[in-house]
Each structure stands twice: as C-alpha cells, then as structure tokens.
Amino acid sequence: MVFFVAFVLVTFFAMHFYVFWRLFGMFGCRRRWGFWSLTILGAISLIGSRILESYIDHILIEIFFVAAGYWLGVMWLLFCTMLIYEVIKYVLPHQPRTGGKIIIAVVCLFALYATLNARRVTVNTINLPGPEAMRIVQWSDVHIGSMNAAYIQKIVDKTNSLDPDMILITGDLVDHFSRRTQKAMTRLTQLNGAVYFVSGNHEYYTGRKQVLDKLERLGVTLMDHRIRDLGSVQLIGLPDMTDPAQAEGALLALPYDRNAYSILMFHRPMNIDFLEQAGIQLTLVGHTHRGQIFPFNLIVWFFERPLYGLHRQGDSFLYVTSGTGLWGPRMRLGTNNEIVVIDLKPE
Image 1 (cartoon, rainbow, N blue to C red):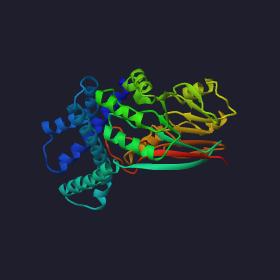
Image 2: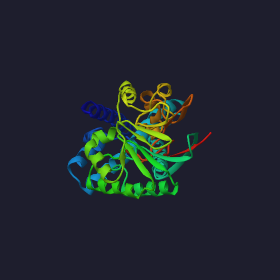
Image 3: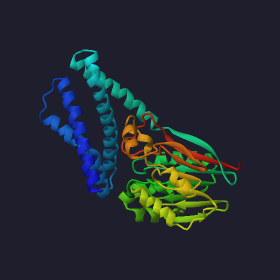
Image 4: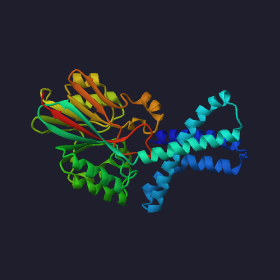
C-alpha cells in the first residue's frame, strides 16, 4: 500500500509539473512560488483528501475530495492534450499563447462532456444460455464515498425497475467508512431481490471486516470463499486477490460441483481458458472501469486483460463490466457507468 501511494504521488507530481511548466511558459508567466504551489497542491490533493477523510468525518473534507477528483480528471485531459499539441505545433506553426488558449478550450469541452456523461447510468443486457430462465443484475465498482447517496438511490431504483432475481456485487462497493457512507449503504435494503457480495481491493483499503459486518446487518449475503446452492445454479465467490495464480488456486480449493451450472463472482479479470478448464460457465468481474477517462484505457490494458466486455471460450463466458460507479474524477470519457443484466435462458 505504501509503495502504491508513493508511486501515485510521484506520477501525479510529474504530470502536474509538465503541464504547469508548459502552460506557464505559453502564457509568459514566471515559474516561481505560484508554479510550485500549484504543482505540489495538485499532486497531493486527491490522496491527501482521502487520508483526511479517514480521520476527519466532515462535509468540508468530502467536498475537498470531490473537487480534487474533478481536478485530477481535468489534469489528465490537460496532460493528454498537451502531448498531442507537442506534435501539432510543428505541423501548424502559431504563437504559444494561442496554443495555450486552444488547449484550455478543448479540455474544458471534454471535461464538461465527461462530467455530464458520468451522471448517466446505462443498462447493458446480455442473453446467455442457462439451466433455466433467470435474470441476474451485476453491480461492480460502485465506490460509495466517491459517489453520493443520491447516485446510490438512482442505481437502486433503476435496478428494481429491471425486476432481477438476484443482484451480484463484484467488489469495490465502498471507498471509506464515514457516517455518510454508512448511511448511503442502507439504500441496499431497498433492492428487490437477493443481494450477494464479494470483496474488491477498496474493501481492503477501507477495512474489510467493518464493511462486511455492515453489509451482513443490511441483509446482504457475503460470498468471499463461499458457495451457495441456488437450485439450478451454483454461486461461487472469491475475494479480491492481486495474484492470478493465487486466485486460481483459491477457486480450485473450493469444493464446488463441476457438474452444476456455476457462476463465479470475482473482482478482477481472469483467464478464460482457465475458467473453462475449471468448469465455470459464467464469471462476472469488474475492477478496470474500462479506463474511465480515455485514453487511460490504453494504460489499464497493459495491466488488466481483458479490459471490458463479454468473452467466450467453449461453454465458458466471462463478462468484464466498466463499473456502476466511479473513483476519483466523477467523469466518463469514452466509457459509461453501467448496470449489467444477464438474462439466462434454456437453450
């Protein structure tokens, strides 16, 4: 965790340094205390506000975190646009100040669209063969804490309108455990249908035990390292594991029935060849956010594959969702928040 935070801070600092160095130069500003103040404050704002939230449960800290998230999204767009500009400036010669104005205008338009798009929730319906007619809804990466109670209510209402038989939550439901987060979590009791949950990496960051205890009190069925016989369907759950070999070993160690129709809940993408050999007919995962803000998906693709969508190997299907919520910037560019509907139908 310490290594991860250090890596993120160094990356954020380098990105801010480059963007502000170039913009200050374009507009003829001296790179003095203002430059360094903006660079350092911007680099630490998101991580710093999240750390403060862990110790100070106050609405002003939450507002600071939301603002820091938006700023990170804008900075990412500035960084990517600036890299493209470094090539364009040699093709279309112009004054640096003009280039700076164009960059800011383009980023403002993209940021506005991404912000509005992040308020939408799409429903992605997939029809698959199954042992009987059954409607399954998948949530993943909701990130309560980064997303407020009003958004949670929106996805609860939309889910209920879909009339699901069960709701499967594949990790990263919460980001922290403040009073407001716990209050927003109570909206889960309004869901029509059985709710099942496996832990994601953010549950570990938040404090997995306290999150699981709260969910159990809310009537959510916990599936970490567990198997549930649901008649014609066998539901299998695994908590998040960063090592694929460890996850595969944990699955094979469970005493599940290989002759039954099995649905695996996990947080991260898995190797579909392995899943077919393990006798898993349907695996539902998330974690990638599909990159959330283009072109970040190109970076995520190097670390998590498959990145998104439905994949098949023989009789085994794997679906990687782009996520039902957001972390950090409340922005979506080239991706969507989605509620996944899996309609199982007998062949």
